[in-house]
Length: 448
Image (cartoon, rainbow, N blue to C red; front, side, top):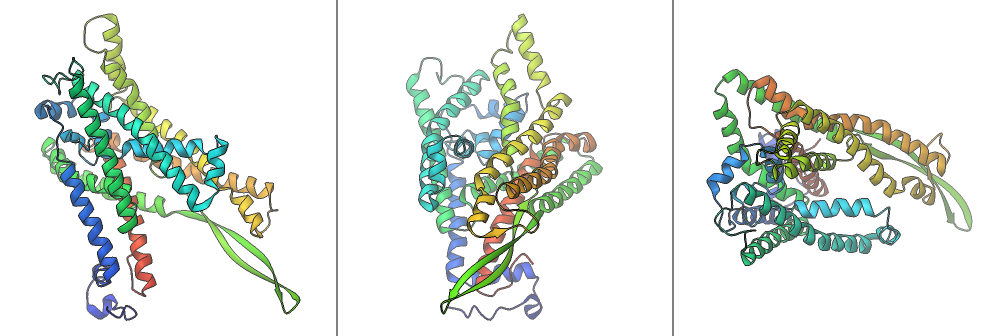
C-alpha cells in the first residue's frame, strides 16, 4: 500500500492540480476500487439502455421527438438517461423512484407515523426508503401504461396490437419497463454503497453525458451559422458558471454553544462556536421536475383528442399550441411555476429539519436571538429571503432554452439547461466525496 501521507503537489510533479489529484485517487486501493465499480455500473446501465421493447417503429419514434410532443418526450428522455429515445426496457429511467421520493418528503410532515419514523435516525431513514421503493412500483406501472398509450396514439407502436386487444403484449411491455426501472434503482443503490457519489444521480448523469454528442450534432446540423454556434457555446459556459455559483452559494448563520462540564467535583463552563449553512438553492432541481411535470400535463391530455375536425379537436389543438415549447405563454407559465415550487419545496423540507428545536436541545443559540420560537422565526425569515435568489435562478434556468433559441437561432436544445443543472450538481457532489477521501489521506484534492 502506498504511503498516503506523502502527497505530491502539482508543483512537485509538474502536472496540473486536477490531473495530479485524479492520479492520487487511483493510487489508493479502496478509492480506486470504488471509482472502477462506479464506472462498471455505468457500463451496465448503458447496455440496459439499448435493450429495446419489442414492436417499436424507431423511425416513427425519432419523428415524434421532432414534433409537438418533443418537450414532453425530451423531459422523459433526460430522466431515463437517454433510454426513452430507443424505447428500451429502461425507458422510464429512475423517474418513478424520484417521484416516489418527492411524495414521501411531502407526506412526512403530514402523516404523524411518518414524521415519528423520520426522527428514528438510520433505522427511520431505511424504513422510509423502503416505503419509497414500494410506492415507486405502482408509479412505474402507471407511467409505463401512459407512455405506451401515448406512443400507440402517435403510431410508434402500430402493428403490435398494444391497446388494441393483445393484452399479453401490453402486460409484457409494462412489466419489462417497470422491471427496468427497479433494476436501475438497484444499480444506483449499489453505486451509493460501493462506489462514489449518489447512485441515482450518477445514473441520470451518465445518461445525460452519453447523449451530449448527439445533442450537439443535432444543434449544429440545424444551424450552420458559425456565429450562432459560438453564441450557443458561450451561453453554455455562462450557464455552467452561474450554476456553480448558485449551487455553492450559502449564508453561514453563526451559532454559539454553551456547555457545562463536571470535573473533579467542580462545575466548569466552556463554550464553542459553529455555523448553520443555509444554501441559496436548497431545493436543487426538484422545482424544475415539478414544474415541467405539471406544464406538460395539458399537452399530454390534449394530444389524445387533437386528431379530428370537430370543435373538441380544435380546442385540443389550441391547448397543444398554447402549452407547446414554441409558445411564449408556455415559458412564462413555466417560470412562475418553478419559482412557486421552489418556495413550496424549500419551506416543506426546511420545516422538517427542526433546526431551532435541535439547537435548543444541544445548548446552542444564535447570537442576539433568543432560543426557541424567536430562533425559528428568524431562520424562517432568513431562508425565505435566500430562496428568492434560488427561485429566480431556477426560473431563469428553466427558460434559458427559449432565450438561447431566440438569440442563437439554433433549435433542438430543449431542456439543455436542466440537463446542465443536473450534470454540474452531480459533478460537484461527486467531487466533494472524492475531496473528502483525499483529505483523510492528506492528499490535495479537486476543491480548494
